[in-house]
Length: 348
View (cartoon, rainbow, N blue to C red):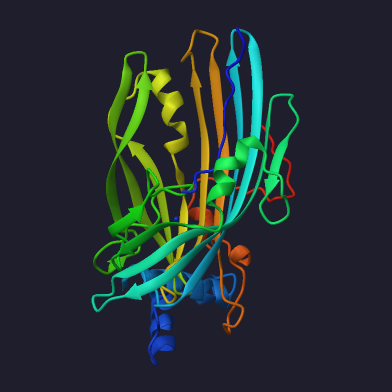
């Protein structure tokens, strides 16, 4: 039996407390309460860091979108995938890399703070290889000839794909689109945020329904995205999230069809700018015996989405310099994002 090909594509379709004038005194008091003998601390900076973390836990933060009419917001997106597929004694490995620049063009902000924007993919750069076949690539900026694998994607580049209206807490109020879903790459186009100000450690859930297939047909699985405000630093909220399936899953066949939806990652939300500036997601899933005893599928992927700030802003920078500072404890394991120069690597 020949191996079935795994087709990988890109879906075109994640405040720091402000001290008052008496802050030095307050921080000193917190330090004194935490460690009576400050001389035992390794450094003053360590004391301040610990004091700040303690203060953060006693504060609440309003995290919300703040877009401006006429504003254009761009993100660099990269998604790297490797799969290993085995059936009837044959093994096939596949790799792909997708990059794009996505654009929000803000058309209106009403009196309630609800925002309307058009969603566009400005450019794409894609590459994939299946088994021992020759790699296929496409760059919308330089290539005139479009490989058959990317004709659908190429047709959408540069065109408004959807118009969304959202509330300040990220709820989609209205959408106008020919697309079947409002999920571009990973999750919804916005991040659902708490309606109230919340402290570090606050958790919330968003229910979702996953479609899966098994030997008896299509199934609907109850699931949720679990969010937690893990850290606040320098006016940035570090929100970690993961997909949790609530319906018991016993079938390896079902596992093989939902693995791409089993996300886990972190969003860095700039509370001053009122938008996410970095999102990192990782997948490491496998299914065994879903099409016979020797069938095996492993799916490993990394995704990164980083904001590109306007070059005219005083603090302008490409967010690739932004890493989840303090976020090493936010994720249980590191998110190793491949770059466009990296070779896709299959993890054993």
